[in-house]
Length: 148
Image 1 (tube, rainbow, N blue to C red):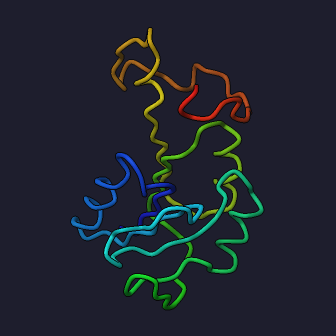
Image 2 (tube, helix red, strand yellow; image 1 turned 135 degrees about the vertical axis):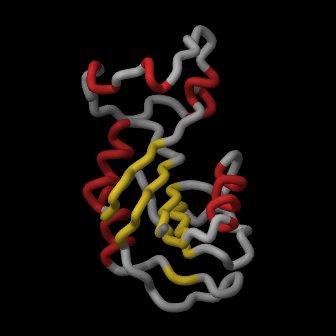
């Protein structure tokens, strides 16, 4: 499968991207470009600010992500359609709104560890949660992720 991972260079993103590579998937990692990829040239990279819709649009329109054939080497641009997008750094609903209209994908998965940190969090299974019962509220982040 052709998979875009938004984030993926820190914490649980690293073993996840490595597992996707080991499973034979065609992986592209989208980051701000602040951290080295460290996947041995096995992924493609796109540099963008995921909170800025214009940055996302520009990154995919101009094919700024390239095939990394070796560390630091840029090759040919690749098609911007993905079978799956795994978003690891959507800290607010506006982050999702900046991303989704500007990429092409068959399936979008948003992952978060924020509930892990909530003191009074209920332990519920996925089959016990119906997202359709909750209103969608467009918001920005009000705190840094490690402070919220």
